[in-house]
Image (cartoon, rainbow, N blue to C red; front, side, top):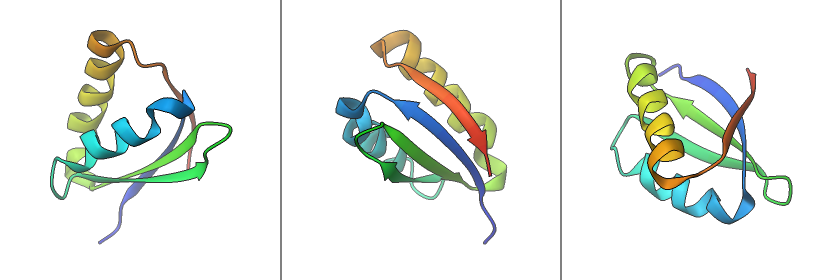
Length: 74
């Protein structure tokens, strides 16, 4: 299956939390750490789930205070 890939910069201390939280939504997305020191992660999203994942990221930023900055789309 083809996925939509987005790269984000987050606080490196939040990488595991984000990974576990996002991947708990079975089949929607997978998180891959690109550079743990720089806090760069790639989220590979199933095409029909992109809006839901972005809603989740926005909710985590607002409710949990997690800094999530979109870097580039590949």
